[in-house]
Length: 204
Image (tube, rainbow, N blue to C red; front, side, top):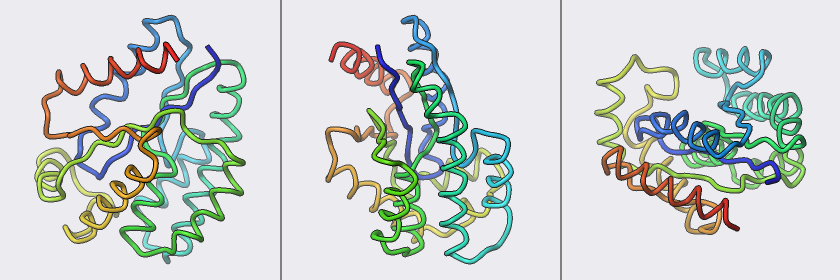
C-alpha cells in the first residue's frame, strides 16, 4: 500500500498514548514499515521546541507559531520522507491538537490556524484520526494519578472542557476522517475497534 498518515488525538488523560505503540505493532504484523512519532516533536529540533512549549511561559502567538514551526520541521524532516517511501506514519497528536488547544482552549481564531495549516501542510491530511473522547473531569483524575503536570496539563477544567468541545466539533465536521472513540471503554474493547478500523483502511 502507499504511505499513510494516522494520528491519535484527545485531551490529556484520555488514554490515547496507551494505544499508539500497540497500533503501530499491529500494522507491522501486516508487513508494513511504520514510523512512530509524536507532536510537538519527532525530530531533534522539533523535540527542543517541544521542551520550550511544554515548560516555558510564552505569549499565545508565540505558542501557536512554535507549534507550527515544530510541525513544519517534523513534516519536512520525518513525515513526508516516510510517506514518500510507502511507510505508514503513526503520530501521537497533529494539527487537530492545535485547533483544540490553541483554538478551542486558548481562543486563537480558527482562521489564523487555518492559514498556518495551509502553509505548512500543503494539503496533506491524515488518512485517519482517532479521537479519544473523555469528559474533562475524568481525564483530570487520570492525569493526577499518572504524572506531574506540564504547562498544558496544569490548566483548569474549563480549559479542558473547551478543548474537548473543539475536538468534538471537528469530528462532527469531518466524520469520514476522524473516528470518535469513547475512552471510558476498556482497553480490550478499544483495541478491538481499532483492529476493525485497520482492516477497513487496509481493504479500501
